[in-house]
Image (cartoon, rainbow over all chains, first blue to last red; front, side, top):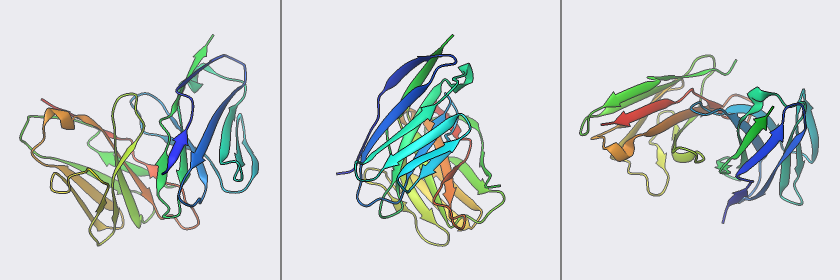
Length: 109
Length: 116
């Protein structure tokens, strides 16, 4: 079956670094997405990885290991506005997104 | 670029009535549009995938006669919730794909439906 696993909730301190992990098992693989979703709003795109390695984009970086079926989203210099849910999604062989349940990130001052 | 709009953003309707939600890709042609619903504190649940000019493909457990999807053009897809019930109350989100060279889906802002 197809499965995406990520932690339900994480807590971090403003200014710190946090890493949100995601493991996936899907029928085929055409890339791994990370989306940010604030409460009551639609998801917004953060990153897309299809090759192994680290992609850095400002304070956010995303890593992919295809052989391990593993990705992480790294958030640096955390700000209060980063409090949100972070959704991991794998694009399967049919180019359909398989979504994780999301990780709720709580930032404390 | 790649902006998707959704209308209305919020709607309250009475049980038994129908509600239509529009999803538009404003600056690109979306060959494929997706409709999701999301319950509080839950992830997105794909309801159906629609390709312009053809019938939508519904996910298992989604009633196609209740959730009517029309994708009449490359920039517009509509979802009609027919004979709405309180359990249909949810956050409905559309996304559009098909931007050349991108696998990404671009999300609309969502529609909060409340059925009383």
